[in-house]
Length: 318
Ligand SMILES: Nc1ncnc2c1ncn2[C@@H]1O[C@H](COP(=O)(O)OP(=O)(O)O)[C@@H](O)[C@H]1O
Ligand SMILES: [Mg+2]
Image (cartoon, rainbow, N blue to C red; front, top):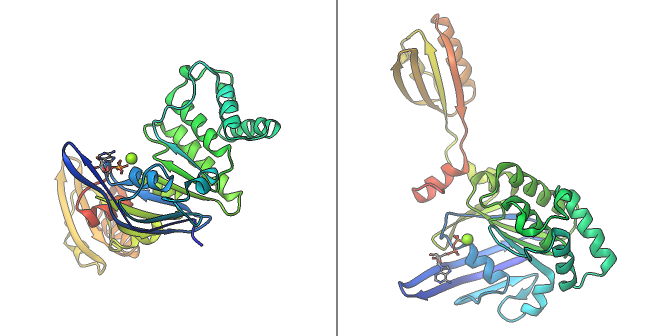
């Protein structure tokens, strides 16, 4: 059994500006234990899919299952087993402290008192927010508030966690702490699953076991980050600047070089080489030195998921 499964899922919205089809036949199978990423630009349909899976919205057509239960008919079976955090959400009572808020939520969720206290303490340590436990929520920064939201969701030890752009707008350090926490949480538990949406390429790449790329309501690719990047040709580009100026025709004759552009600047020659083998880098470096010039800049640009998205859709993500 998969932790999450969808079958030909469609969702249509009718509004003042007519019809929007947010999901157009989404088929997904997410395995138990996976940290699965849904990567796509704004408006791609990520939140709509999360809302269906968390039983907050009905699909127009098709089915969705979480832990084997039908999201349209068995929401009472699903809800106690899952939890969700959205980026930029404001939950909790501003006049209560972080600790009081988390305590209140623990009681809504029916967690026994001593156990709730222990979990709040543990989460404060793991997410590094012990220092704000006694601060009122209305005085928190966005990052601090999001740590509390994350603690609120993970407190219930959910079987499936939905994170909808959990690091949206957070500064680099807090985003990193949250990612580290999610990874650690999953690796220390059996049988748990995390579905995360993001439009941050590096977040999906760094964190997820597998990624589905979603665009205009359709899954257009699904694989591990590594395999997705292999969809783009094995080429990379080497950027270098050499001085003084030298001829570069000899670079074109290196076997794995498929493209070459040069630009003369005041400080020498800027060279960009398109190639697909590592060995060629050494040949170029030696060739420059043999011609009595020196290299003042050298950079190999890796293929990123951004290149994959660009190749698939013809546009960038952010
Ligand atoms: N409640 C709604 N009413 C009308 N249109 C909606 C509603 N929710 C989402 N949409 C539209 O559906 C599309 C997908 O939105 P959404 O799922 O929020 O995308 P994402 O989370 O990837 O940014 C967008 O075009 C959005 O405007
Ligand atoms: Mg969204």
